[in-house]
Length: 376
Image (cartoon, rainbow, N blue to C red; front, side, top):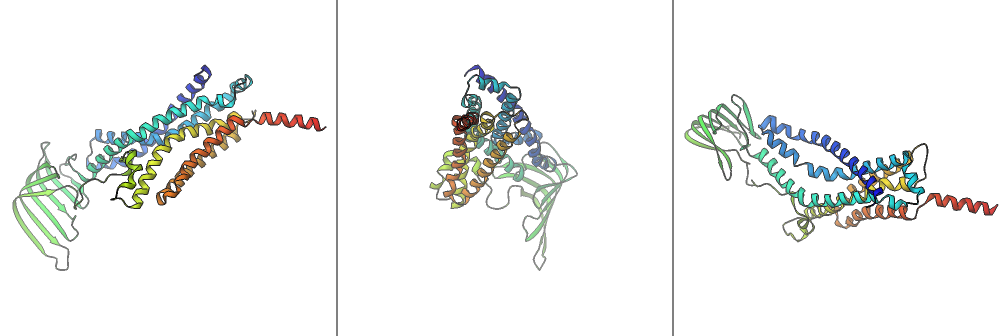
């Protein structure tokens, strides 16, 4: 890489890092609010909260990187124009394509890095995040009972304890279980203990009473005294396993999901669309870098600023991003829309290279002036 390319690339990278860090910080704050309830209502440990929010960062980085790179490239090349540096480079005979090499190099590097993150790091992070979320919502192994307070362990299930020890022993227990809509169960016990089994955590009650009230028309009430009783705090129902989402699958599993006989056609479409996006989204770093610099490199210099060119570049970027979302949504419904997703990538790519290679408004204006003089 030439010194000139290194000079421009260094500025682009610095701007990219600043914009990316700023965007990630804002998005992290907004996304972390979704997990605050787990800390306040379910007693989620702080280290687990930090781990869950941190696992969101790879996915957000891949989404934000093209936009951050677009902003950085647009700013750097516009500043080169404002400082007249780009004018000197053009006067020295450097072509627009050569001037765009720095942006292309940075975009290509970030694209390769994002391909790795999108297909290696994100599936692992999503699996870990989904597992932590499932445990936080359906498992109370991380939960600490609050003495003298009612704790909502699961939907329609509340537990009250007078005293709780760190070793798992509890005293003065009251459990209200309304998970079964056909009946209401109330358990009271002198003491108990939390144990952990392969099927999930359980609360063993000792010396207590179980009261049950049916909710049918007869409203039958029954009471049972017990010496030992087990309460399951896991997921109610038969399915206690966490379902695997599309983001947790590998690229091979997504692209060859049509071979899985257990999947419906809608699931196959969604998985294959996710696989196509795993490839295309990182490559948009190159497209957005080219869109940001092409207009500024081939356009005529304007002392009043490059407002029109910048506006066109921003509108082009938004258009490509919007079409990508629209075509992905269409592909989920019907796979024959898949070529549109790749066309949305290839068309801006070839258009930018065409302008960088062949479009020269200054030369066209010069030829027009010579032709007018000859017709006089």
